[in-house]
Length: 73
Ligand code: SF4
Ligand code: SF4
Image (cartoon, rainbow, N blue to C red; front, side, top):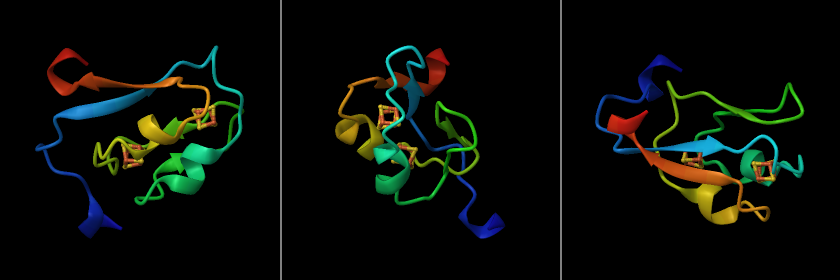
């Protein structure tokens, strides 16, 4: 889906604390961009498509998805 590729306007990006992740897959279910990959035990977010909306940060029951500023990443 090249047309859905994220531009350089994203200001925040989610980062998963792998040690705290329980593998519940809620971030995968809730992501409106379907850019969370569950191939491994800990989800991997495709930053080429993540819009930085923060839904995964808000919905993670383990509170292990944190927002970081793009400039700091
Ligand atoms: S910030 Fe939004 S788009 Fe990015 S992975 Fe989380 S829910 Fe998906
Ligand atoms: S919602 Fe949180 S605990 Fe659940 S799989 Fe995603 S990152 Fe891990």
